[in-house]
Length: 468
Image (tube, helix red, strand yellow):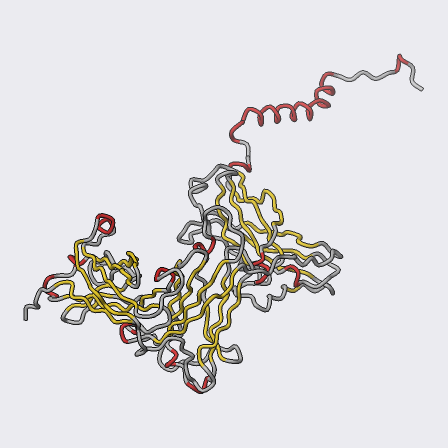
């Protein structure tokens, strides 16, 4: 043990050498503090981020399509807010890599698609949409999660989302998503939803189309399906008026599309608001182009109100012998008589629509009136009314915009009045857009009541001779 007299004293030089590392650290810290704006800050670079995600209830319509889970992903960002943020209301998303990954034997694989799946991928990504209330973008995934069998590993969603403009130009780098949807050992949950479509078919009409209707597409048959809403009525809104038109297809007895001989398969689908809480869905096609060897034919479609379970229809339109199952034929008694056709200047309302001429057509019905009078009867037009000049040129077709005169205007159909057994209707159109060099001009129309045949109507609307 050393005595106090033998304790060593450090020189000033040695003390400074011992304190040197501490002094250097202090000087470095002070220098970094003074640099301020030159420090590296990740928040100065924009990047899309996932703020949170949550599950939402699936609708009956989504369950009918094979989905059992809906994932809501809220997107935010770090860094400065770019100029396009808030301006792009419906961004472009990508789910090309969207897959459900699961494993039972250390081997990952994508989930199977639902049997009635109608989209390209097994996971449907809704395009990210801007939400004003939260200043965020929201993306949603519809996922057939219940189709993934029970497994020992987690079910994981792997995908990417990106926000872009309406032209598909990406505004930022894609954001990878890895989200656990169902943990290992969790039971499979199948959503319980109502299968009531709140729609019923009230009437079906299969109509033979005449020469006027067949132009220019060559359709020979029109199918009309009258649907009625059977749900509760909330307020004054008629739910069926906002129902999507939907689509459908023609199939044979085996559910396969038949081969065609001369024209591409198609059809015109229309949804016309009819009586209150009813709507007529219409399809036109050419059955003559489908060989008789195809046998019986059916029209199948799904109709749904907003998010409700769809109403599936399967309607026979041709028997096994190749004969159309028509409910309304050409040449049958129309039960209509043309009383008068008055050509006059358009009123102020129709002038605002660009029309300058109206034709009021009065018809008399010769059949037995139902209870409630003629207003309770179903009046239909061929939907191919048009104007035609002496040269045979057509200018407009009802329900479509003009394609022959400056691309402006069109023909409008209006119900006018009914009294006793008479019915008055009106067509309006911009006659002044047809050049005088076209000569005389006629209105061509066809009108029917009930299941009776159409009555052809031809009205001279301009009597200017053609300069030959």
